[in-house]
Image 1 (cartoon, one colour):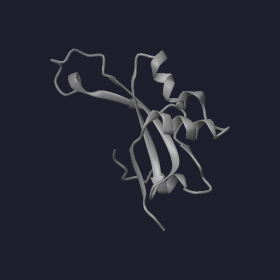
Image 2 (tube, rainbow, N blue to C red):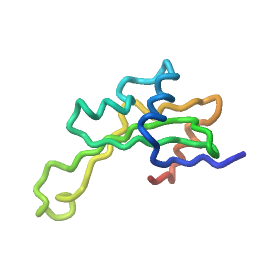
Image 3 (cartoon, helix red, strand yellow):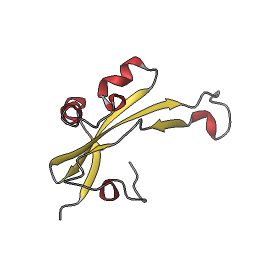
Length: 102
């Protein structure tokens, strides 16, 4: 079985995937970040070259002055009601193993 990878994707391809998944939340729509103050990154979950999932990751800097030790330059990362995954092609355990890092 081909390995599952998570990597940056064009918002258009993740939007197309999202539109074909009736169970997907509107919060995973790549355009959602345009109505919030969060920055976003669209990621594709792929088995080989086949798109089997999509995820919108929102990010925002911690609201502290940069001079605060450790936390002053950190960011929150948030995945609202996601990822969106075609579970007939890939399981959540395969897509997001405990040791997953992006």
